[in-house]
Image (tube, rainbow, N blue to C red; front, side):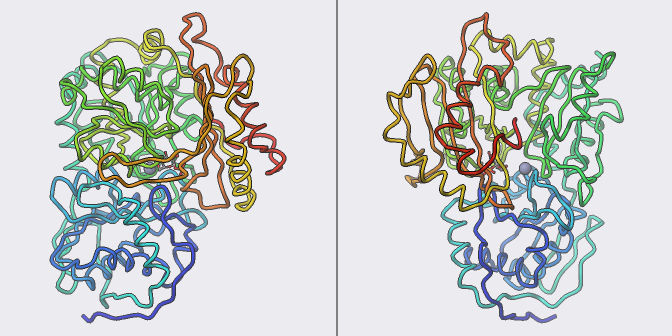
Length: 545
Ligand code: G1P
Ligand code: ZN
């Protein structure tokens, strides 16, 4: 087998976003497109000889083809071994677990997370470092620079490898280990939670739940853990078989895309006390009770407030961290616990240094992401088990737990409004105009309060001193309310404007207002300040979560 050096030319736009490079499948499938990006990763890493790489993905369309390409290129780059999840499957959190447990040099994860899959939908690729976490901004910037100057890639001339069976094989001089993608991860989770107590809940108390894997990667993981290890009834996990197009659905665990789950758990006469779902690559979570959806920001605060019930976190939490747009519900818990709360830019990669340095134990994002120092990625099934452990220990319903939390800490009314597929130039202009008015805003009256401060969030990493600018425009009001504007870094069509709205309420009589109603003055102010209709022509958001 010989190594071929193929001439190539740069493709524009291979710039990784919030979480790796995401593009339409048809863009990725162009000859040389994936190859250029993978070669740029290897070139940025430098000498790969003798190292072991992890490889797998969420099973979406093009996953299988891309794995064969990466394998041939890894062999040409001199890797000693590549470990591939059976059938090319690896959830993002499981990838993080395997890299850490086995001390691998890093991993390539093929996923576009919660974006739809199929020939006309999305594909993605990201590189994770030896700590199991997403590569830092400086690394992804270096990869991007490399993609702009690349002139050749290298590939072993070789056959496709059968990925369907656990086996040790070779590709040229490189070893290829096809392994069970579930085992290491399941073992890690078992070490964190009180599996005995959760199992009693299912087996002795007859507790019933549904986990909707949305035909994405978590099916095999959830079945192994919930049904096989914990004794939940067979059929607890639905849509459990990963499909290349996620069964035509949208693998994003929210009440819109997991509407069937919400309806089932909430239907009159339902025996189900709990529902949960995860996304395409298994790092997001949604948690619900009958007629009650737990907001991700509230979920993070509840997890932190109940940490003493969980074996792995029963000692002290070192600290908590949340992305800037995430509601400040967890800040109140941190304050009461007397621990620090870090505020980072959007994207899990910013938690990596805090976790590595032991400064944060729990981390979370408003976009249905939560995780801990057990990994360097957010983790959907981890969040579900954390909730199960709380439910088993407290003997209350999901709704009782959250309402009790609000009574104790107050409620952060919270919502995100997304305007999708906007004209990119228009979106840039909207931000330019918004940034221009920021200095004039302090003091501006808004309903019964006024603007206290307005800025563009910049983050100074307390561990490595790196600075990330322009991470979202923040407008803070005197009564503690807040509006945040930012552009998505994961979309594949035009620009997506995200507006995050938050209002704090501690009056016990005012804890049950419908969310959009509670936020009406902020929604109006956001529209006015950003001149949304005037600039984009849109009169309402596409998605409200
Ligand atoms: C979105 C979320 C962000 C999350 C990322 C990857 O990024 O907002 O919190 O880390 O997906 O799951 P965005 O599209 O906003 O850049
Ligand atoms: Zn994801």
